[in-house]
Image 1 (cartoon, helix red, strand yellow):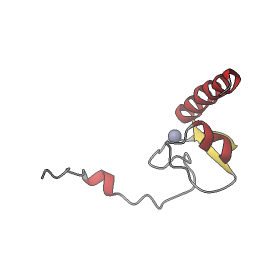
Image 2 (cartoon, rainbow, N blue to C red; image 1 turned 180 degrees about the horizontal axis):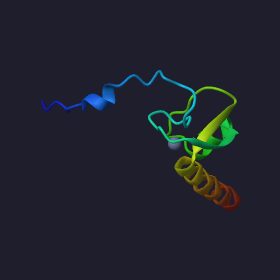
Image 3 (tube, rainbow, N blue to C red; image 1 turned 45 degrees about the vertical axis):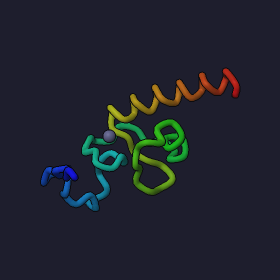
Length: 79
Ligand SMILES: [Zn+2]
């Protein structure tokens, strides 16, 4: 069996919360805060910090907007 090598940087404590983007593992400075439920809906693959509202960095905010637009479009198509 092969073992995956884990870089040391990945083992850094992620407990340091507050100040940055609410996406786990992201260090971006927050630009916008959004309702957590919306972000979780649009980007379910992201691990978000707790709280009713989450702060997103510029990059993640863009990703969120793109994703939520797509979600809406899918919504309209009906299922
Ligand atoms: Zn981010």
